[in-house]
Image (cartoon, helix red, strand yellow):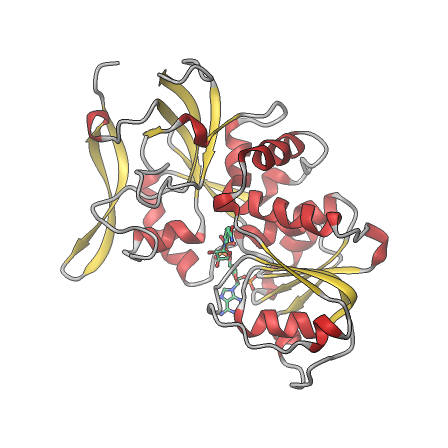
Length: 332
Ligand SMILES: NC(=O)c1ccc[n+]([C@@H]2O[C@H](COP(=O)([O-])OP(=O)(O)OC[C@H]3O[C@@H](n4cnc5c(N)ncnc54)[C@H](OP(=O)(O)O)[C@@H]3O)[C@@H](O)[C@H]2O)c1
């Protein structure tokens, strides 16, 4: 293919702070990987906002095009597994970290990062799910693998209106778990109930508890997206043999807790890193997400924006103000 100019949201440093704007780039500037993809949709994750605002732990060098998620159509492939015209998904690996990401109309990636679009999902639906949804799905699978069944009790979700949280609520409810959604935005209770939450509480109800090493058990499982003191409070209020997943550090990376929930109640704490999920695990989970794990309420989760609208959305996610999932339309 001849090199082609395309639009991308570029983050760069200006006068000591990071700004994002839509610029015209050229495919000849993309890394020389085996597969060139015309991106149709991307999505906004917390990590994208960190990259877009110059967080060097995520992205080392700028100007840079963020976007850890992309769904689109293969334009050119030197990898025998893929053909021009294939609809595909790429999430995480190095995309949008130090490899130009899904906020550009083209990406160039190694074939090993590519998941064929599973049947049952459109490109847009795959980006409503995106990395945050994949992370939630990995957590739900871990809880199920620990033999927590829908009738066993309450499953708590923290950061419930966020990207990971809102898909966790949606998927758990779809699988008939009884979901308790904890949020700082109680004005979004109707949204969370529409996704399937049985009950919505203010997140302070989780953390405003005595500092005892063990408290009354309230949930058989929990999906924590927040970390820090929230995660400690979640652990101390888990029931016997409770299962807790941990994926986020919105409240900080430190975890101060105690051993009694683990040694006196058999509580399990399970980490999730969707970025390094094995390809066989991704394929299995994406397949489920297109079939028996595809929630009817999927479209209620998302708002669709254009590249130009992303800077305002990035600011909102950094301030903890997003509700549900922001999908980026790069097709039209
Ligand atoms: N390990 C992995 O594989 C992986 C993958 C994806 C994301 N993550 C991480 O998971 C976390 C969530 O990601 P996301 O994309 O869902 O982000 P997000 O959309 O911004 O959601 C985070 C949610 O946390 C809650 N929150 C914000 N500030 C808070 C505070 N001060 N105290 C308590 N809760 C607060 C808010 O929900 P409420 O207002 O509803 O409380 C917010 O919507 C991030 O740390 C992200 O880096 C990890």
